[in-house]
Amino acid sequence: MSRKKFFSKDLIFYVVMLAFPVLQFCIFYIGVNGRSLLFAFQTVDQYNNATFDITALSNAFHQLFTKTMLIKIGNSFLAFLLTYSIGTTLALFFSYFIYKKLAGSALFKVFLFLPSIISSIILATIFHFFMEEAVPTISNQWFHNTISGLMSNPDTRFGVVIFYNVLMSFGTSVLMYSNAMSGLSNEIVEAAKIDGCNQFREFFHIVLPGIFPTITTFAITSVAAIFVNQLALYSLYPGGADASIQTIGYFLYIETLRAGDNQAQYPLLCAFGTLISLVAIPLTILTKFLLERFGPSDK
Amino acid sequence: MKSRDRILDKFAPKKKSSVSIFSIVIIVFLALYCLTLITLFIWAILASFKEPVMEWRENVIGLPYSFYTDNYEFSLGRFYVDVTDPVTSESIQVTLPYMFLYGFLYAIGCAFAATIVPMIVGYVTSKYRYKFSKVIYFVVVIVMIIPIVGSLPAEIRMARRFNLYDQIWGMWILKANFLGLYFLVFYNFFRNLPDAYNEAAKIDGAGNFRTMVQVIIPLAAPLFFTVLLINFIQFWNDYSVPLIYLPTYPTAAVGMHQMAAGNDKELQYIPIKLAAAIIMLVPILIVFLATHRKLLGNLTMGGIKG
Image 1: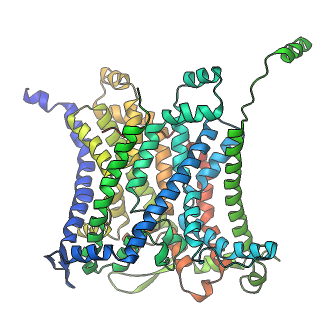
Image 2 (image 1 turned 135 degrees about the horizontal axis):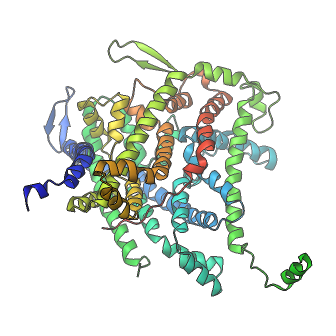
Image 3 (image 1 turned 90 degrees about the vertical axis):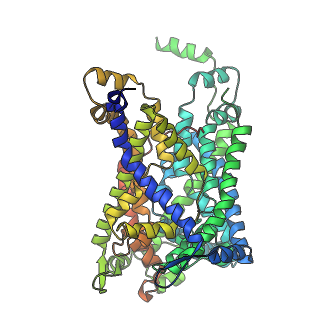
């Protein structure tokens, strides 16, 4: 290959366009995660001098199996299972309704997207006070049943947090699913209709298999976020959430915030992150494999 | 003529109604969902107009006795965040207009960076079929399926090292990455765009850059603005990242968080906090109502291959 052909205009353009994004990726993804891994094998003193040892990793490993951390891990899984299964099922039904342009679909679309455009701190503030103040008052005044605030009651608070997360989860997913449904071939849908296919069968036998790649993508990103998801706890409980409902994502965020400039705390947090990643990575890969293996085929 | 049409209509096969039990069940769920949201907002608006001490004690769910607007006046007056100047160590009061300005600069810059970069990378990798394009696609997929948890401390340290910490422009650089769902959205869009556009531009003598700027980007403009708007709203509403990375540039969302979480005795009253929430709600609601048609436009994403 001649030198002139090798350095073609296309190649120069290609390199120039990708130079910044690739450099950014190398520094702020590879560099950051590499540094995080390194922190897990270090101890940092009060003058920010780092020395190699596995104290942080060993401490994190032992703390991981304490009751409080196991509760956080369990909460992360349970929250994912509940919010994903309920949220995705409803999102798919709602998306189908919008795709079919049934009565009021334009208005419902706006309502479904509304929580995504409002700051979580605003929604969480309103939701928190409604559950704490209004619901007990309604129960007392209308039904003569005295109850405590649902956000502070140990029996109800986790359920209420899940309800809030499901309520807020529809925006982007409904938008993506309904637009993916719009891309389905009209001929197939019409042919099925002529063959007597009702809406229920159309949804399960034509629409769901047709948008399965989009469902897979959302499923994978949701599984990947199991230990990152804070469940909006920081917004719902600005003063701090009770340990019994905390997730790993919330714990790591709050501890990093508390650590602030104190880099001596970083190794333990990074060690926790590294160990949790060892669970999250195979789990996500397994999800992708299972969805591709047992999901509907393109052929 | 009209009577003939009426007779024909009478004997024409009846159109099957599109309302089935299945759609009725969905409508019920949708109605419940909308009702929940409406109830929350109406209750919050009414509560924000209640006298915060005496009236609130006896009237949590009813209509306000009289529309008490002092809560709004008080919230606006107390909407500030105290920050410490990193150079002089003096305490500075950041007021609401500045919080709006910082929030706007943070949101618009980050949204632009987080939209333009995936768009350009999506275009280049889908239309220039070098082996490295496959590597980029593979990297995006791998990053999506390999979640790395707990790297926030390392990211803060890296931001400090590159002097990006506590700088609004620094956040723009931090957010200028091509990873995530929007890369797939743009990649999918450009891959489905016929190569004829590029070929025709080339025949007309346009170079690669001119083709991208004058032919391809205008075609992707509606998608670009949809993603830009979604990103803008997300960054405007985000308080968790500015809380950590921008200690001396509190955004409006951070201000709201401080007000909700603060221990100030005068701000402990729920109607005052709700009034602050409503004040914060208005600007973004106006943006949404003005742009919702564009925002809810065509945003499609395929699956992950690889």
